[in-house]
Image 1 (cartoon, rainbow, N blue to C red):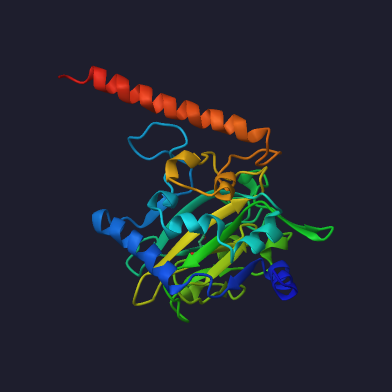
Image 2 (tube, rainbow, N blue to C red):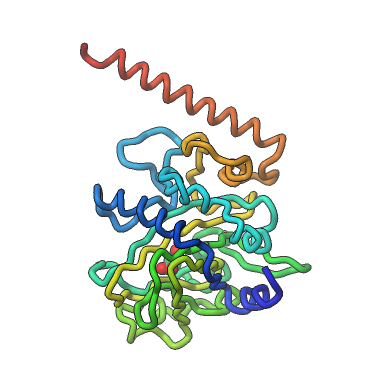
Length: 301
Ligand SMILES: O=C(O)CCC(=O)C(=O)O
């Protein structure tokens, strides 16, 4: 992260980083998504890890895009993105949750809902503001950034002027007053307050933003869909989601990727914490085996 980028991130609360993904990576992410859509057709995949998938009862099993393999695994720890996350979160940050959002003109929830802001930017009714216990904070102190939650939005489709897409109130991560309530929701692009910046991007670009900045999605008017993948990161001691990853669920991962899926603790990934979590995962595996064995004993022959 160079000096210009540090200046802009501190000033505005987001950064637009161009050409993060190669065309081959975009194609792989897109193909894996479309394969699922052809069988299901949902608008959102992955999850904010606030609930278990329906019908599945094992702990640490909330939905994740990482299950899809390929580039979805690589996104956990992308070399182009890692230096930004390290500057914004400190070393040993963790992946907290991930999901894909699909914008289209026919989506009934096609409105701008400004949210975010641990310093009151989101106002008293905000979903991730005052009620989050101050988790979505932003600060710069003694030569380093402090953020409670940093989102990386990877664009799979080009967002042209007037289409819609990511928007925020630049600088609101440092504001001392709540967002005026009449600015919170805009049903059309025409209603959007002037202080909101709309960010156009090319397929393969990433928009990195602190959740302390009031942000949302501009009502979509583009001819095609906008498909955006979000990977959201916390410092190692902090969590937004109540549900943690189980690194055993996603096939082969690098040591660094496994560390980044660890649950939060003051130690982060460490000789004290790794054996604790390995034990939890082993117990999970044993539980699943026992359940499967019991189910087969119970099933009528
Ligand atoms: O559409 C966008 O890029 C913004 C998404 C958003 O509001 C969020 O991830 O919290």
